[in-house]
Image (cartoon, rainbow, N blue to C red):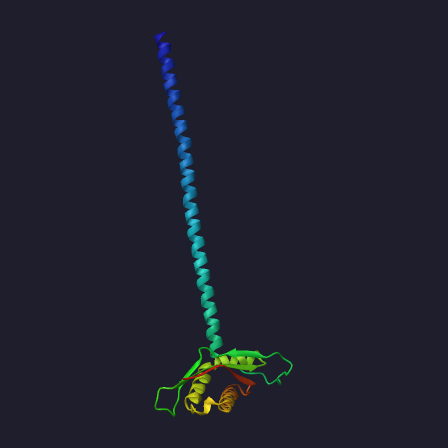
Length: 191
């Protein structure tokens, strides 16, 4: 009888060990599956992040090359006649023009905000393209004015016409067409 009891105990121990092994095996399988999933998710995240970054770099480089190509091409104004019924388009030069007067020994200056009016988007593009030249010539024109003359309405209107003529001259030289119909002073400060 003792043999049978010993046999039963050994059988229970073997079964307990087998059950323990069975219990250990499923938990290690779960740990293995979860760690494998975690590694795969990390790898997938890295690949996705790399794809996004490389796509953004590619798009930025393409965009910059487009603007470089556009900057190297002069803008021509088409030879179609101005459409008088087209709505006016205004362009505002920023920042305001500031110039010292040539006739004064004192420190007097002029600050003026200038807007131009045209009826063609191509003229606006040409103005933007040639803006450094336009600003330079307008500043030179403003700095050679007489402060006493600009105190009167007639003096300001004469300066307005001079700026318009200079702007049309530049656009005609650069594009073959004057393009601008009017110049407006939206702010005019003498000090």
